[in-house]
Length: 352
Ligand code: NAD
Image (cartoon, rainbow, N blue to C red; front, side):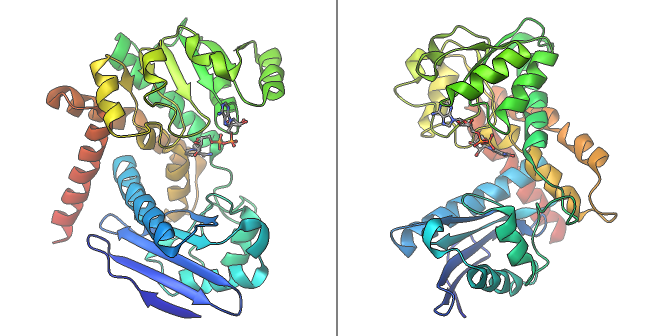
């Protein structure tokens, strides 16, 4: 196992591991540990080049610093990527080597599940390092994050309704939700419980129909969902859903859902502002999962009551983001980054 360092400006540590025996070629980026150890998922993708993998790990680890800073998890930002096709290279030897790679940073980086990495994969990694989170409750972890992400989204939608409509009450509000997967499906139920009128869509039409029959949602075809007039649009499927093509079609006053990277480009945030559509920045509203994981680091170990108390603070974070956006007349996504940078700066001052 050969570990080499890559110097990158504004990143605390970026390291590469190449191991011929197991076939591991991986990168770990520790963006910032001012507020705590750098937590971020491990993903595996068939990147065409190491440069492509490096761009991804740098972007994602920085994103984790910002997400954790705004969510006040007491953690910093990091990420790891394994280069390769998950259908071809996964093996016990590969994940054991990855475990040793994570461990050589002595807890500066803490890993978790991400794209193409499963809990069983992480259980192998865990045999070589204790710096692994998000394992099952039975294994002492905080378990599946999705219900916590869904709860955080509900709190965020209520705070967004308060900002846009003057009241957090969702009774009678019309919500269109795209993607009823692990998070979206749960969120749809929570919204309905709050009295909202919920319309759902999913590329898996059968799943949407089944949920609708059970819980009394309306269903539309995915391709038609933006034609439905609504108060709140909750993207819960994939990224880049707000783009040049979809922007003119929007018939909502608020965009607030769990999907990552909702805006295809930064400039789309300006367009939403100009159209008077309130956007709940993705990494602020979808932080419930990481807040839940962060509670694993509390002195007494994971505690669900404490996790829920902290997830409820997503509403307050969004109120702060909206206040910054209003004061500066800037897009809410930019306001979220400003809030993160302020928190990181305050952290730097308090340690110096
Ligand atoms: P999931 O895979 O369980 O669900 C996604 C759902 O969206 C599926 O039902 C799928 O059929 C549907 N879908 C995919 N593409 C679609 C499309 N083009 N149109 C309509 N439906 C489509 O995923 P999830 O865990 O619920 O996560 C959803 C989003 O939330 C992702 O963007 C994810 O990155 C983000 N997110 C999830 C968590 C979490 O805790 N799971 C945390 C933060 C962010």
